[in-house]
Image 1 (cartoon, one colour):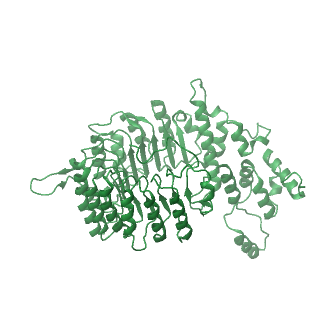
Image 2 (cartoon, helix red, strand yellow; image 1 turned 60 degrees about the horizontal axis):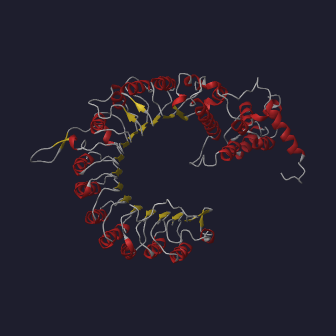
Image 3 (cartoon, one colour; image 1 turned 180 degrees about the vertical axis):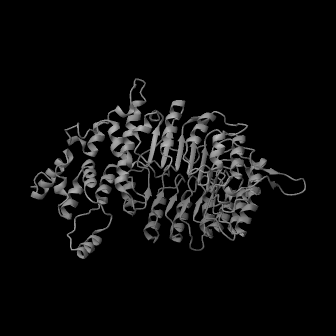
Amino acid sequence: MGESEIPSLVSLCIEAVKNELVRGDDLLPIIKELPRNLVDILASRLPPLALEKLQTAVPFDDRDDHDFADEGLRNGRKRGRSWNFSTAWKILVKSRWPNLGNQIEPIDWQQMYWETHLQNCLDEVAEIASLPSFDGRLGEIGISDSILKLIGFEGCMDTSTCDYSKLYHHCQQFGYYARCLRLQNVLCSAEISHLLRKSLLQSLELRWIRSKEHIDGLCKLLNQNSESLTSLEFIHCKLSSDSINAICSSLPTKNVQTHGIKNFSINTSNFLETNPVSLPLGLVSFLSSGRSLYSLKLSDNHLGRNFAKLVFGTLLNASSSLSILDLSDNNISGWLSELYWRSPSGPPTPLGIGKSFQSLRVLNLRGNNLNKDDADGLRYALVHIPNLEVLDMSDNPIEDAGIRSLIPYFVEASEKCFPFADLMLENCELSCNEVTYLIDTLSTLQRPLKSLSVADNDLGSSLLCSQVAAALGKLLSTSIQILNVEGIGLGSSGFQELQDGITKELKLVKVNISKNRGGIETANFLSKLISMAPELVTVDAAYNLMPLKSLTTICSALKAAKGNIERLDLRGNIWDYQPGYASMHADIQCNGRPVLILSSSPTPDAPYDDDP
């Protein structure tokens, strides 16, 4: 309200009621009898603490205005006895955390607000508890005035009846709303289970768990949430066999045979035994009894081949419905070839196959130092994973021999109508000839891929890359939706071939052609692509040595197109640092946001095409 505006009587009354409601409960009986429209206005102006108090005191209904009107007519009662405060909570969430709540509704905005608020309090307390000088109880640590002001506590003077100055009070009042929390190691003391005793946690993310004290405090919390917990993630932790046994023994169990965990993840952590002769018994029991287990991620943990072999072997004999297996960024070369007994005269025979892999949809083996022999072993394993949809073999030196071993599987999967659809082969040390052969094969499949990435394979000279570009042109004519050819050295001639290969409307939705040194031909290709791919949403064409006039070509194509491009990344090209160009093309927008991504200022440290 501006300084010159005179507040209305209603506004003054609402402000007075708001202040009184923050301080106490005396007005609640009167507010409950107010007409619906006045309560709505009041709710929209209340701070979170007051809105929580109001909603707790009055009846709640999640129906809309039309439902209330119908009920009032049928029952002969006036409206306003039940209210839906969802809109008010949504406004509070969006004003404090603008990026939250972008998922598909419906959303419990009240639960989201207090859960995120409690997370903010826990993060703030963790910083204080991490100081070497700290020697006290977590619950007694004070919450900063900046956080208290956000919930409306600044107006509450009687701390004997509404004290929110300590963490303990926030956990006591709002712990019930906590479903998903992130805890630093200093929070995993014996006290944490008491502080969160009202919570029904469904998901826990643990960071920097290192000591036995951390493990003991965590295990109490796991036991306490045995009926609700379904997701558990460890990041930057150091885990011994004893600690893994303790954690797995504390996980919730629906009965003596199975547990209820659906998602289990250990990322960027250290196992004290990275290449053991046997797995910790607790982990074996956990994997074997995980009939609800949907996702298992053991990524970037420096695991050796024995660990991977033992995990894989345990899963083979389990009865889980595992859908996602992520063993990326470890060092497990050699384990795949050991899964099969090789006959001198016949094909390899699997040592065993379990129900787990009948449901496996996503297999991530990125960055594991796998070689051509591993790729050969994987070929035979994949036949026994009939529902596989996504395979990531990126950052493994499988070379040409490795991809030749896998190509027969791609053909067989298509012929047998397997749902295999997404293939990532980035930085696999593949040659131009082998990538061309791969793409030619994929272009003729009965069931074309949905997504392909061969990024960051050095394919040699631009003349050799022209044959890859010709093959890519055929692939684009299939129903492929996502293509990533970043940094393969297409050059100007490659983009010319790609442009010539587009002869009909494409199904492409997302494409990455960055770091290919295409010059002006990159812009010419983009111009044709934009006109022939009406479903195209995202394009990355950064660092392609495009001259200034390319921008005019691209902008003309965007303005003439009938498609729905939301993002076109053009950073790192020759016009990058020309002042004023970003504002000149700000009128090209989608959903209120600029489509073109142009660097607004020089960035000397940014990567460039010719950088190693």
